[in-house]
Image 1 (spheres, each protein chain N blue to C red):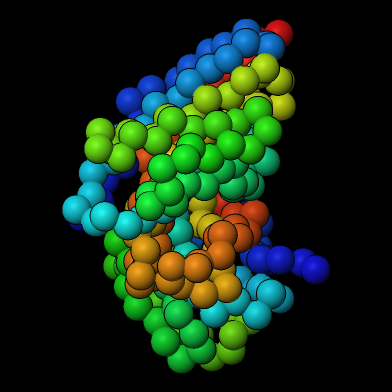
Image 2: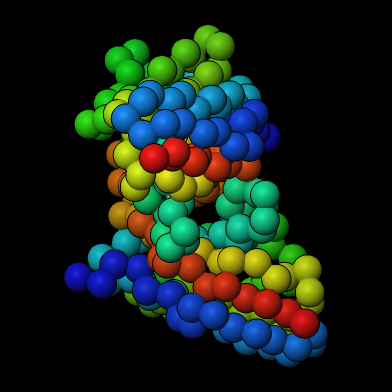
Amino acid sequence: AQTVTQSQPEMSVQEAETVTLSCTYDTSESDYYLFWYKQPPSRQMILVIRQEAYKQQNATENRFSVNFQKAAKSFSLKISDSQLGDAAMYFCAYRRVGGGADGLTFGKGTHLIIQP
Amino acid sequence: NAGVTQTPKFQVLKTGQSMTLQCAQDMNHEYMSWYRQDPGMGLRLIHYSVGAGITDQGEVPNGYNVSRSTTEDFPLRLLSAAPSQTSVYFCASSYRVGRHNEKLFFGSGTQLSVL
């Protein structure tokens, strides 16, 4: 079974600075997807960024980028120029390809605090 | 375009009561699923469906039933609620499952408390 580990229960960063959230995973599959989801206090699950394992290039979405290290099974999220609206729970998730009906496997989340 | 709609948003039950959490999507998605989120935990898959008439169990299916009579609807039934089922429940859908799977669309969640 796949597992996803987020070792930082809580992170704090000053507004406008850069923060990196860590995620490691364990799988025997060679092809899969990795995701970062944001969950603000509204409870809504918002997809931040997605990485396909067969792509070597790291995904980027505006101020959000990932450092995907397939051999190390590591998938960290970097948020640049942090804004107050970035404050939320962040979940790392894994989904296998080809019959991934068994859904996403989530980490336990990192609570990100933005200090004004 | 409403996306994924969950009702109710909040519910309080007594132990032993039954209820159905509703989930509807208007995007003609083949795949629908239910997750629960407990404090300090990520979301865990309860049940899923890859099309009308087809359902299967996820990681934590005990105490829950599902059915998929239409493409649009995927209700989650608690037959005899227990305090351990106190959680936030999310419904999610996507166009199809497979290599070209679209992103998962989540509903806004149902906060359920069982006393």
